[in-house]
Image 1 (cartoon, rainbow, N blue to C red):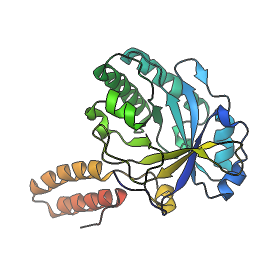
Image 2 (cartoon, rainbow, N blue to C red; image 1 turned 180 degrees about the vertical axis):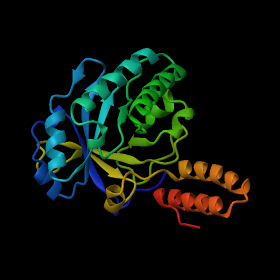
Image 3 (cartoon, helix red, strand yellow; image 1 turned 90 degrees about the vertical axis):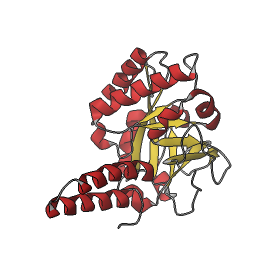
Length: 256
């Protein structure tokens, strides 16, 4: 996977464990984004989520929400997705979230890699189909290697991997979108330790929206190239070329 960089946007992820947060101080310390715990299973709502959502947005911090998975079947996963979606919709909808919705996958809720992968995919598809937003997966190296099939590597990754400058490839993933690089951060405005995160791009990139991975962009560009070769229309070819360059820009690649 790619290395960390001093140019990357810095963030935190928080839950009720951090208590009351002074988001103004957090913003002033250089934090650009925050992932907030929203739900767990189908019965737990983090009691600081709404307050953190409102207060972080008020000072200009980019926000996202995550769900901790407890599902033991695809059916339960879809119910958990609906629970998560309902909470977000009750608090302004997915339009108030600047970052992708997150599925936190870190405990084995089924016996086999195939079963866990099916459960994860069910949650991802449910949220994507209903909200139109592409979720990302949060996990850590051992869990990814032991319990997640390589077929999930088409889903963007938020990797927890501490004290490394360049994480190794994991379970088919060769790229991270977010990296949780420490669980012992100290940030003004937050009492005690807090998880520290890094985005794959700069603050300016983050302001423009989470970047598409180069792998995904190139898959779409390949389809555009095939369409380009199948048409004699100069206008259509010009549009295919423009769209391909927009995809290159969105994934941090040079235009052609």
